[in-house]
Length: 424
Image: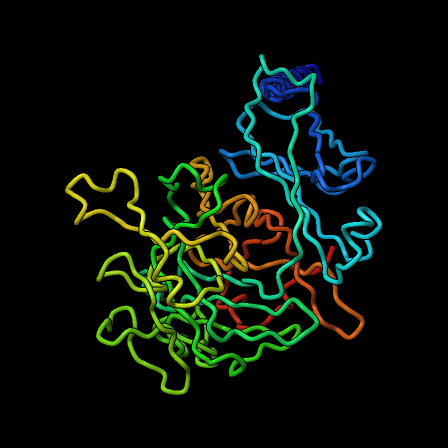
C-alpha cells in the first residue's frame, strides 16, 4: 500500500508540474488589458447621433478577428494580444433606420444605406498608449443594386492532385426590389491580385481604381434583365467541369449566362459554348493577358462606355520598368465613382502583407480566398416574399465568408442555401 501511495504522490506531483507549466504558458501571452475604439459618424449626420453597430479588430498576421458592438459610439475590447491590427466598422441600415438616425438626410432615401469606416492600422505593445480611444471615421452611401455575390477564382485539384483552374466563375446578384439590366456593364480585374500588395500609393485614400484587364457584357440596354433576388453567372468556361474519372470537386458551369472564351488559347479556354454569350475584352495590359485567367483576381463591376474607358489614362506600375517602359506593367486608372461594386481579396496565409486594392469608400477590407474554396456573400435578411437581401457594408471582411468545397458541394451556381451565409 505504501508503495502504491508513493506512486500516486509522484503522479500527483507530475500532474501539478504539468498544470503549472500550462498556467505559465498561458501567462506568457502578453496583452493590452483594454482597447477602446470610437466611431465617428459622417460629418453631415446630426451631432447627437451615435454609432451602435459592430466594430471589427483583425490581427494582420493571423487574420483572426474580434468583434464588439459600440455603445454610444465606442466599442471596448479586453485582453487584446500584442500585435498589428486593422480596425474597421460597418453597418447596413434600412431606409427607416437611416431616417431615424439622420432625418434630414433620409427624407428621399428609399433603399438600404451602408455605413462604412476607413480601415485604421494600429500596433499594440507594452508601450502602447491606449488611454485615448482609437478613432475611425465613417462614410455613408446607398447600397448598390447589383452586387458581386460569389467568387470562385483559385480553382481546385483534380484526382491526380494537379491544379485545375479553368472552372473559375463569379456571380452578380440583384439585391434590389426592381429588375436591373447587366447590358453594357464592365467587369475588371484590379491590380495586382489576392497575393500582392499594390505598388500605387493612393489605392486606399485616392479616387481611382487601377485595373489590369476588363471585359464588357453584351446587350444594347434591356437585353439581359436580372430579376430581384436573382443572379447571373459569369464563367471562364461555360461547360460542365465535373468528370468522374478526372475531377469531381468542381462546378457544372454549362448553365452559365456569360463566358470569357478566347479563341486560340486552348489551355485556358478549351471550347466555346455556342449557347452562351461571350464577353468582349476591352482592355488588357499586355497581349498575353486575358480576362479571368489570373488566379486570385480581384474584381470590380463598373459602369462606363467603351469610349470613356479608352479615354482613361494609363499608369505604369511603380518599379515595373527595370528593363524599360516597353516591358513595364501598365494599368488603366478608372474613376472610383464608376465602380458599382468591388470586392477586395487576400489569399489565406498572405494576410500579413496587408494588401489593399480599392479606395476605402468601395471596400474597407479584404475577404479571404484560397484554392478549393469559394467566397460567399452573407444574407442580411429575407423579405416576406422570400427574397434574400445580401449584406453590403462595403467591408468585405464583414460581408463575406470563405467556404471550402467538398466534392463540389459549395459550387452549385445560383445556390444561396449554404448554412454559413444565412442571417444570424
